[in-house]
Image 1 (cartoon, one colour):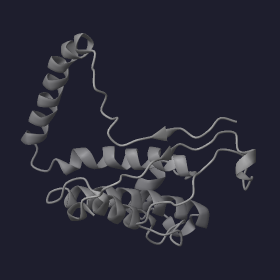
Image 2 (cartoon, helix red, strand yellow):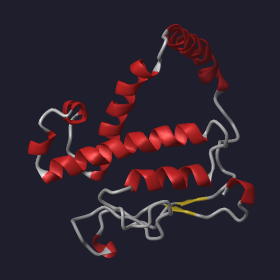
Image 3 (spheres, helix red, strand yellow):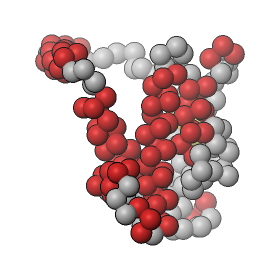
Length: 177
């Protein structure tokens, strides 16, 4: 098994870019963003268009954690369509997806007045874990133990891959914590 990969502050972004490949992409990307921004500007409530996209992102991203609910199931749950008949495991999965969406909205609100900082990340993480699986695993805190990939409850030496270990920054400005 290989050693963990060490990443160090200051090595990202890369020092040299392949500008000849990037520059031709800037114009079309900027035009697409401008069209999208223009479309959103014409809507009285842009959230109506963005909300399903945010929910779909929450559904897809929650699958990484083993959540097994579909976009349709989340929408039916929110509409109150026979949610009392849902199995507890399905209800728990949907609650996790709804928390994901709440965490994104809360972080978005915080980013109106704060830069992207540890405080925003920690608060969003606490909202994400509020009342769901993982709520007892230090919401709002960084994980202190690395993750490995392998069979359920296997020892770290039996894991199929070693985790990436980030080297902590030597100095963290207190105004961003």
